[in-house]
Length: 282
Image (cartoon, rainbow, N blue to C red; front, side):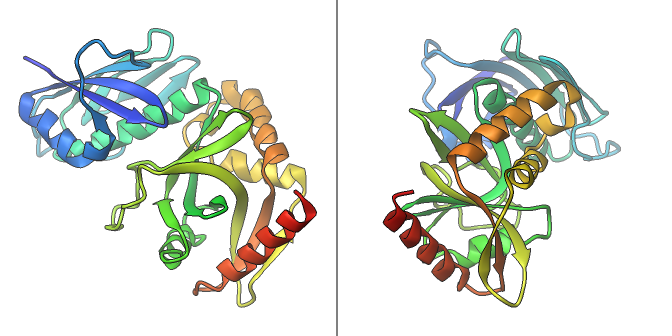
């Protein structure tokens, strides 16, 4: 089966996707177009993935890919999707048999870029990211904590990079937040997904009637970040490195609790805090 190459680029990390059949590649291009660059076959890449769609099988469940991590190796093993991913060889081979292959492809890319980001000194965070004039504010929390709500309330106050997953990379001693194509399904306005900027604050969300910021201990801040790192926080073998990476972020970027209600008033609090830090020189 002839494959069609696509060059998927996210946070400066490039993956060559060898996709078959041709119409499946066209579907991937339609879904991820803003993140796909022209591929001349000679561009240096960080990873190569052979992805084959065998066709829809109505009897097969579309459950999420089941992932087994073992060091640099990752195994996908369900009736709907199977294959292997190796950071050692920088390659993957995936076969999809799902009735919704693009959804499965997106889930594979989420897993791949969580691993690639970590392997290149960064992290993927389960969070919302809003780019204001001062930089990017990251809003973290478990599902239901209000990330998507806060992101939608932020339109007009900043550019929403994503309401679910952000990639962080350390560049010249500064943590840069990159928008991703991995939004909550129902979000239609994704205009900021290819933007990036330096992170100026990280906030754990707490729904409240009052709106204010509350300090966090370094230990609590690190724990909050670790719990917000999909895929890699489920691998015991990565635990020590993940703790060190999160400690590095906490030392560089202030992490606080943000109590907020369902209106944009929390931005007034964030702007006051930004003004105070600027005045104090920190």
